[in-house]
Each structure stands twice: as C-alpha cells, then as structure tokens.
Amino acid sequence: MKKNSFSAAIAVAAATLIGVTACSSASVGPSADPSNGDKAALTTNGDKAALTIGVFNGWPEGEAASYLWKSILEKKGYSVKLKYADAGPVFVGVSTGGYDLALDGWLPTTHAAYMKKYGSKIVDLGAWNSDAKLTIAVNKDAPIDSLDQLAANASKFGNRIVGIEPGAGLTAAVTNKVIPAYGLQKMKFVTSSTPAMLAALKSATSKGENIAVTLWRPQWAYAAFPIKDLKDPKSTLGTAESIHSLGSTSFEKNFPKLTGWIKNFKLPSKLLFSLENDMYNVDGSVSDYTPIVNKWIAKNQAYVDGLTK
Image (cartoon, rainbow, N blue to C red; front, top):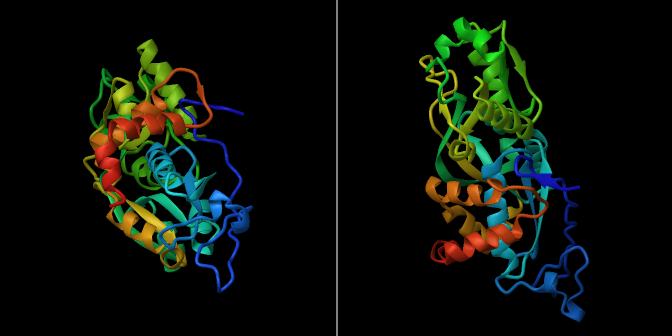
C-alpha cells in the first residue's frame, strides 16, 4: 500500500532490540549475527545499532526530521526503523521503551497533557526548532482575517471547520478553547486525518472556495496553497512553541554518541520547509521518502555533515 503526497507513511515493523553478552562491545539488531559480519551488528561508536523512531501520523515536520536522521544514521551503520502511530501511542511507546526516540514533541502547550502523564518516563533531549505555532487557516482571499469574525461568517465556510486527527493536541485546543471562546459551537468541527484535511484544502483553494482548517507552522501547506492564518486575539492557540526530541529512559545509556548529536540538533524553518517541500509537494504516490531525502542531503551536505560532528 502506497501513500500519496498528502498522507503519512504506513506503519512499519518495529525493531526488536536484542541484548548482548558482557564480552561483546557492540549491540546487535533483530537478525544480526556478528560472526557473519551482518551490518546491523556493527557500531563503531559504542551505540546500539538497532534504533526505533516513533513518528506521529500526519505530522510532516516530525516525519521529515525522522527520515533525515534515518538516512544519516544508516550511513553510519545503524539499523533504523520508523514506526507510525498517533501522538498518544507514540508518547506511550517512548515512555515504555517500545520506541527509542520521537522527534515531534510540541512544548510547552500542544503536548502538555501527554508530558504531564508520561513525562516522568521520557527524557527531553532538547528543542530542534522554535517556530512551531498552532493556527486556524483560511484561503487567502477569504472575507475574514480574524477568528472573532468567523461565527458571523460561518455560512460562507459551509458552517464547518476541517480538522486533523481526533487525538491530536491541536484538535483538543480547538475543541476546548477556540470553539467556546469565539462562539463557534454551531459550526461542525470535522476531524479525520491530516491527509484528509490537506486534500480538502487543496480542493477548496483550487476551486476558489472558502475553507477553514486547523493547521500549524512549520507546515509545507503554506508554500503549496494560497492561505493565511486567522488572527487569534484571545490567544486560544497559545504562542510559538518548540519542537522537541524525546527519548526513552534508556536512550542515553543505549545511544551515548547519538544522544550528543540529537541534543545539538537544530533544523531552522527555512531548511525544514525546503525538506518538506521536496518530500510532499510532489505528484503521484510515494512509498519511501529515502531517495528524496538523500537528494536533499546532497544539496545540503555541509549542514548535514555538521549534525554528527
């Protein structure tokens, strides 16, 4: 099953981490055999070779960062698996050690509830981008510019707001804060998935129709479609946030070298938009973004080399 340019990758099998004996200096992956030179058994820096990264369904910035690190690390002898799930299950997976790493924790607001619940069993490895912002976006030529104008013009938007996944922090913020604060209870809040929202956004803007969607920055949709953010005078969606790397409690012990790289990892919005546009702003189906990401790496080699110095 393939995914198109608006959809998140399908779930892949999780790696099973196999312990090593005291006399071994390297960790082995799920099918590695040091005696036959299996690549997954090789690590030259003391880290375990098998790494599982949890990726939020439908969150392009996290998927882009995950694919970037997958390509970087596989060239260094790691065996990297990307495992997809909604935000909640990823937080659970990191907290239990089922996932070693996740690269899309929005703090201090969007994922605050998950951190409150699971944060004691998760290691915050630092922020790699500080321009994250939750928004309600509309087509650029929409007749309104602020959320406090939406209720009076609801009919012009089909009396609906198109959302993303029901379990997303953005969905909770719109449900619990935006809708009551701006009197939008009569509008239908449609939630399903990020790909469905993006498809609806593409369809409406191509037809010249008004549409209101839940969105966030950084997001490649801002480069792909003629849209604008509605002002939020009551600050219901909070201020700019940071995107954090989150590790399991055993991450620093199992991946001491990678821990340093991740703690120093920074991906400025300009570079992130470039990577996302290469990955998602394409025609046709894409089942594996690795070739696209490798081409992007070649165009930005100096930056990428600096991530593991």
